[in-house]
Image (tube, rainbow, N blue to C red; front, side, top):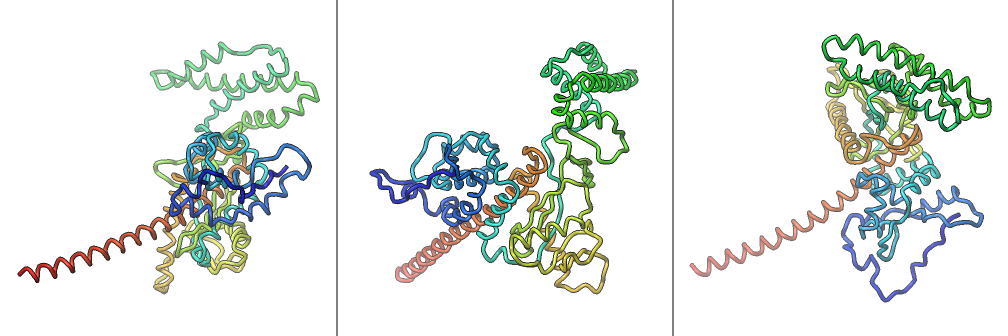
Length: 442
């Protein structure tokens, strides 16, 4: 059920937040620039019209998601920070200071599930609109990166150990008596693995790894055999993942690298400091002249960069309601020269290239620092959200936060320029009077 709208005409003897805060603060300005009614109109369909417990205001939940990405905080920390920060509360639509937490962290999880990928895409659309004419450039730069998932570095032995732990947990929850728990056996095998780099330790460690895999296979088969038909359906998907992990080999494709995130893929981007990255592929589109992010799409499959262009161009058309003129990309996009009637420019050895095109190819490199800021400043370096939907939501929220931050930085720059011009004006007047005084004294 939707929450009741607040009456802005309510009088009070106390000053409101708008009276107490600095009206030139970027968050204060941004709160008045964003069209919050746009979110109310589009997200109200996700709420029930029947009577029940009123939900939290849509503006509050959207603002918390944006502030979380802007300040690079977790769900738990943004809820705590909101109760301490007046600008956060004004940004969320509050008129007076509230010392309590606005909601529980799990309500943010439920709100992300409620609006889904389509709803988050509308937040990205609003972030582009706020940038005004800077987001209207139809000459774009494209690049891909890896959005790493919050998983440990995967090895076969790690996965086999986790399968053993999970199978014992299923047996306890279903009251299944296992033939053997292998508790002390696993403890001894872990000791052999710990000293695998010692003299003559590699052979024993190899045997220990093989033994751990055998134990995991035994437990999976025993659980599958002893579960009832009805209870087996509850754990069928989980057990099938365990079986696939135990069957997979080193040279197989579509391997499973994590039990709780089976959709994670392995990417090799040719980096010296990080040979393998485990997560999903993210495709980014920015305007060449201004650097506004106008496309951010996640791909759970390990596909060629050129094959990501049709989908991300289609997203750009949804967000901007027009087609781009041309897209400039690196040599990883070698292949088609046109996608959906949009020209794709990839650098190549061509002495007849014009100076304007050479400049645009050079300008394409500006997308690299944009990706760097998305990763290290806006929570793209490690994704903590669940599943492939969490990958798509985290990417678009990061892009929207960076677009909003870009506008906030522009407002700060404009304010600083005004103060610099005023300072220079008074300095010039001072030196003129000082020069006149020198002439009169001498």
